[in-house]
Length: 441
Image 1 (spheres, rainbow, N blue to C red):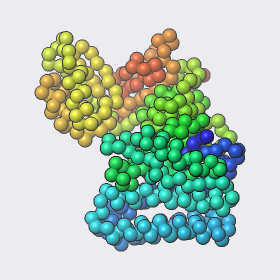
Image 2: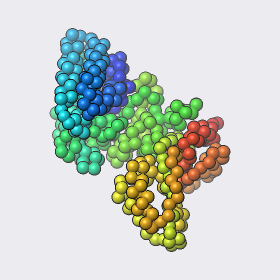
Image 3: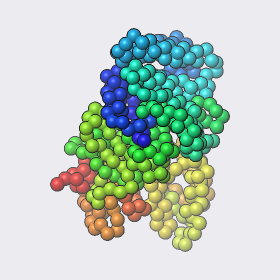
Image 4: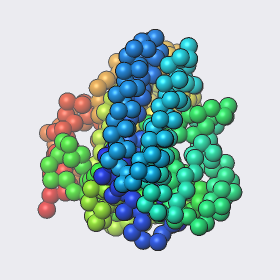
């Protein structure tokens, strides 16, 4: 069984939704199809929520009317029969009746906001399933709210998902296509919640891992993961194969095609992930699996909004316990560290969340000295096969970066990642220089 996920742009127009129907039924492979909300819907629903919170019911209802008109037009173009149009319209009318009812709830809390945002996925999946029914495709709609749950730390309960799907899926053995929602779930209180933005990728991977799928496919509007950022660098190209570790590094450090959490469940259960392009289905895309080619340099990604902290021990040499005390403080304030460089008496770290930076700095100051933080930094992440047997890896990277100031270097923590910290003003120059130095013939 396969798990195929389609993002907002892939379902954002009636003709694209129709093409998805063709894609998923080209062979007899059973599939769980995970859909995001129609492109633009989530942002509009969030804007409606902001208007409701501001007690601006006129603005909220105006946005609701505009969004419903968009869905009404979508329905009229998607379906081919009066029966299909009626089924689709019934879905839209029902869900927008609920959306409008939320404007009367005062105060409008986070609970209602999450119910509102979930409507994007609830609409897209019901509309698509009604279209499959119209087209005579053996299918069923399996609500994600019945098997997807997060714990008190907002982490998915994959054991719960495994157990629920093991109970539910055998009831639909006669259905070729099982449609479900990405992104949405329930929390420990049973309320509607979500896996945060981009969470539809995560949903697909969690389902794929839970059912031990043969393959997870993530369909977007890009031909796989590129070797560099095509918005900044010319002459990029799709990377055909990556290991789980390489893909995880790229996703975390800025590759937009893949949600950073996606790889974890797939890697845990050894389920291959394939990145495909709905605009060009015949393109091979990118395959992410346990093994890949021996190519030294695979791809580059960049993560902005980084702050660097420089911490020095006041005890000087042999300061055992120094690192432990530092990281206990970051743990206390739930602030992850991205990058780390150490010497005998000093530690440099980077963070992408400075909400608690004052508290962290105040506690660190009780046993070490701090330099002024460097803000507006960018981590450049280079991934590939950097085993100890591969000569010249660092030389090629530093030759490419010879005219660009580097603030920190992290190399050797894994065999798949070399990271550099530069000021964000040098980001475009660095990406282009590395592309020329590492990938040019």
